Amino acid sequence: MTALRKIELRCPSCSHEFPSETVVSTNWFGGKRTDFHERAAGAQPWAYQVHMCDRCGYSGAERDFTDQTDISPLVRERVWNELSPHAHGAVTGSEKYEAAAKVAEWQGADQRYIGDLWLRAAWCCVDENDVEAERYFRRLAAWSFEQALEFYDTVPREDRAVLVYLVGELWRRIGDLTQANAWFDLVPEEVTDPVAQRWVVEAARRQQADPREWFA
Image (cartoon, rainbow, N blue to C red; front, side, top):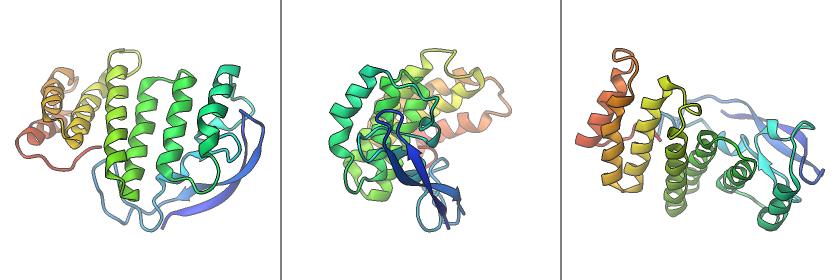
């Protein structure tokens, strides 16, 4: 089971203090939807790994709610204008990740981190049975990862083959096989260790010939 504990957070944007819940431990007894998207027994942990201020809507991981978090006046204004209308009442996990991704973009975070937030928003949509929103967030994740791959200082050389594969798999799950196959074709070019990374090359070829759930 996923064990949760209550925490108190202070919003760095509006200084409001509010309660939230965070994950203490998770037992992965529910199998896997994909290699990245594991299933937990009981409550799924993703929705509890980001938090939203119930006053202004500022969102992020627990580390984003500290006295050291610097919020510029421009970001604070955007939080109030764009996120606060959605901060009251019950908020889904995908909505929290969407808000966190927007804040990360406004804060100038790197695209790989932003892509991870969009991807987790899609995972939450799977658990929320929202197919259209899932595809929407997967598309945003793919675009963010594509931007990250444009800069070699953002993605370590040894991580690029897997991330290229992930972009291809995101497009496949969205339903754009042309883009998916184009990215799968790039995987061998990004391999740095042919022995250790042979699996990702084989996975890319398999997804083109016999698609199945692996990543994303």
